[in-house]
Amino acid sequence: MAETIITVEGVILDERTVVTLTELTRVCGVSLDQVRLMVSEGMLHPLGRAPEHWRFTGVEVRRTRRALRLQQDLELNLAGVALALDLLDEVEHLRSRVRCLEQQLGALSDAEGPG
Image (tube, rainbow, N blue to C red; front, side, top):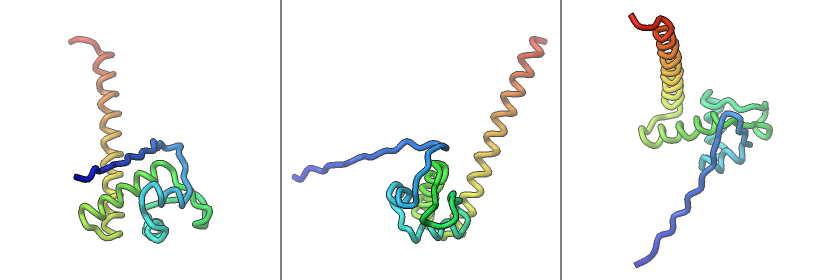
């Protein structure tokens, strides 16, 4: 019986993380052409004008990974993925606003005190 060896590699990314185009392709397992298509479709917004100068934030890396999952899991085309990403971003934004409003409402309730 053959033994299976699994290698797990992880990189912690945040908004301040910046990667090159080559690093993005390696980290996300995408081709240069796929990244170029995602940029032309408006899914990714690299820093820099030309591909050789493109830099991607941690947010863009997460967005790339999410786009790939949407393509694979839901079999969406690029236009569908772009729309889904926009909708998911809007949901996240609205959830954040709701949390903020709930905190403000809680603070108001606490300030008023009992009864």
